[in-house]
Image 1 (cartoon, chains in turn orange, blue):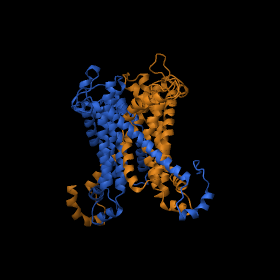
Image 2: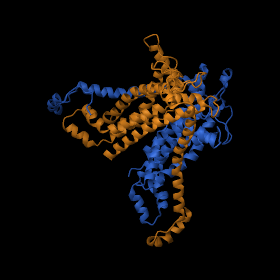
Image 3: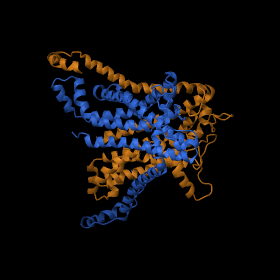
Image 4: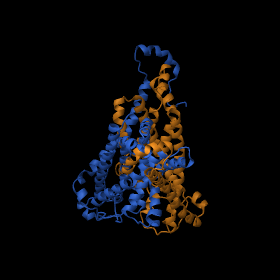
Length: 315
Length: 306
C-alpha cells in the first residue's frame, strides 16, 4: 500500500490516456480470487470426500438394498444396509420439530412485526437473534435431563416415552428452530411496504385481517424460505438427536415415543467409536453422509430460489 | 391465499366501520388473535428462558474456580476435583486459529464478489450460489470433509489444526455473506468520489469502502466465531471424544473443546457428570452469548446509516 501512494500522484496524468498496469492492484486481485476459490475448493473437497468411499460402499451393497432395505445394522453380526430406518427417524424428528417451530415462530413474527410497539420490538429482536446462537449440545442436554423427565412424569398412559425418544428430540429441535424462523419471517414481513397495509386499512380491514390476508401472503416467499431453512437445519442437526434421540436402527420406528437413530446420529455414533479405515462400516458413514448432503442440497436450492423471489418483489 | 384461521366474515365488519370511527369496539376475534400471537412469543421464549435457568441451577455447585483450574477426568471417584481446563484452553486455541484462517479468507472473498467480480459472468454467479449452498450444508458433513480429506488424505491427523481448518471452512460462508452485505451498504457515491480524486480501485476499496464497512464486518465475524465455538458435530466425526488431560501445546497437538467435553460428560450416566456438564454449559453459554451480545451491540451502535 505504501508503494502505491507514492506512485499514484505522478501516474495520474498518464492513467487518463491509457490504462497502466499497477502491480499492487493486480497482485491484490490475484489474492482476492484465490480467497474466493477456497469456498469452491471446499465444495469440491466435500464431493471428493463423499464420492470415493460411497462408490466403494456401493460395490459391496446394492443401491436397491440401500434405498429399500428396512434394517440398518452395520455393527451387528448379521449386517444389513437398508437406509430407511435412518430416513424414517430423521423425518419423524423433523416433523415434530416443524409442528412446534412453524406455529410458534410464525406467531412470534406476526406479533413482533404487526402488534408489538417499536420499543418492544427493538428490545426483543436482538434477544431472538441472541438465542439463535445457543449451541445445539445445550438443547440436547436439556432435552435429555430436563424435558424428558417432565414428559415421562406427565404422560397419561403407562407406556410413556423411553429414556431417549424421537418426540423429545423433536420438541427440543423445535424450540431450537423457533428463533431462526421467527427472525427470518419477521424480516420478510418488515419488507412488506406500508402502502399495502394502509390500503387494506382504508378498506376497513381489521388488524387481524391485515396480518393474515395482506402481510402474510405478501411475505410468503420469505416465510417459506424460513421454513425450508428450518427443515434443512432439522435434517442436518446432529447433537440433539445423538444425545436425546436414541440408537435403534435395526427396524423402522414409527412410534415417536421410542428412540431411533437418525442419519446424523448414526454418523456421529459410529465415527466416535473406532472403525478401521476402508472397512464397509467406515464407508457406510460416507454413503449416509452423501444421502444427507443430497437432501440438504435440494432443500437449499428451494430456499435460495424463494429468497431470491422475495428480494425481487420488494427491493 | 385464503387463511383458514379466520372465522369472521367481512360484511358485518364493513357495516360496523361507521361505529369504529367514533368509538373503539373490541372484537372478540381480534383480541383472541392478538393474544394467540403474543402467546406464541411468550411460550417459545419463556420455555427457552426456563431451560437456560434450569441449566444454571443444575450447574450452580460446579460454578467455581475448579471449572477452569482442573482437568476433566474419566474416573468417577476423582470427580470432586475435575474441571474443564483442557477443553477451555482447546476452545481458545481453536477459535484463535479459526479467526486467523477464516476471517482473512472470508473478507477477501467478499471484497472480490462485491467489488471486482462481474456478476453477469457464469462463474461468478456459480461462486455465489456455491457459497449460499455451503451456508446450508449440515455441520457434520464438514466433519466428513475433515475426516476424509484433511485428517487422512492431507495427513494432518486428529489435531488442533485439523479442527481449526474444518471449523474455518464451516463458518466461512457466514463471514462472506455478512461482509458482502456490509460492503454493499456503502453508497456508490463514496467510490465515485474516491475515483474522481484519482484513487485506484484498491485504494478506493482499502481506504474508503472497507473502513466504512468495519462495523458490519466485525458483527458478522464475531457471530461466525461464536458459532464455531459452539459446534460439536464436526469434531465428533474427527474423533475428539476422549478425556484429554493436557492442554494443547502446538498445532499438531491432541485436543478437546468445550462442546465436545460437554457431550462426553452427558454420555456418562453418573449424576455428578450431569452437574459438571451443566457447569461447563454455563461457561460455554457465557462465552457464546457474550460474543453474540457484543456483535449485536456493535451492529446497532456503530453501523452507519447513509
